[in-house]
Image (cartoon, rainbow, N blue to C red; front, side, top):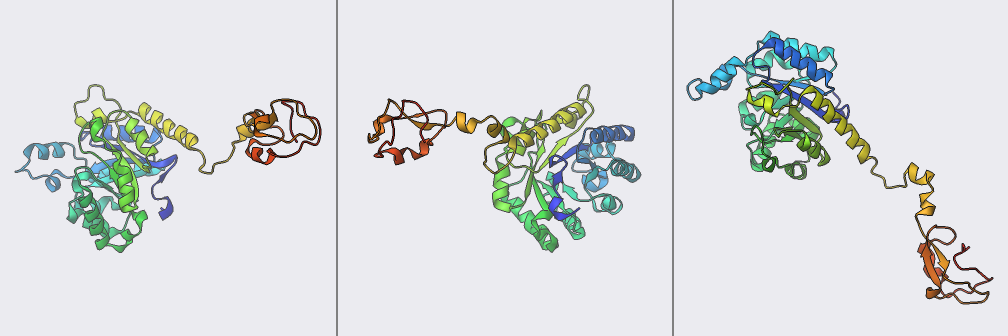
Length: 335
């Protein structure tokens, strides 16, 4: 990827469908979700690669250890999913949560995604940084100070990350679902001000309003969880996921927003010009009464009316005190 287009998607923002662990360890289901995500029109299909033994202590967190063990896919299965994305010309992405997995999946990754829980996992971040690919950092659970320190740590590992195009941040709240009052989209602008990096939003709120709002606030990366259906699902992440239909609807909203945002340059539009509204909506100067030749024009003789025929209303002061050269009827065009 060229650096200037690293975080640019087909429709403006880079749109990431996060399957994550929604496959629940079922490879056939994982393939189905990848196919559905691809057909939904997203730019990136994302999963999570972990081995329970390399992620969670079986002593300190037995339930979480069992959860991650249950949701594991094999290396060959992950590679197969990556190849499905490559064949469809869609980026494959995975949060890689241990060094060993990075060895066999790295060649399928154009950039890296570090989850919120790993913002302070410096050994993992060091391993990613050594390889010099662009990195997306999710920032749930963190303070601004922690985010800045992690950026400095990564740049200390590899100078390539001094190029702002090689790092990006996602505003994120690690609650599932995230309540409306904890989404905190205003952090997007705060991140922009304090880091000068590409900023995005990782979505754990229900619906797509927060995603749309984040885009309007300047988020260039939009990540959300993805599933086939929320009906009958018990695993937490399904409940905050968009379905294929909802994903397509969301993308249509982004496309519509792009049209609505339009151009930055302020000029009359083509329709305004064709409709002649520059004349019919704007005003010119007219006399309120019949005026005789030789009269001196006083301000009280004038009125500002549509259409803008003759002398533009912005020039009214130039008329005051002038001598009339011929008889002029009230409300007729002035030359």
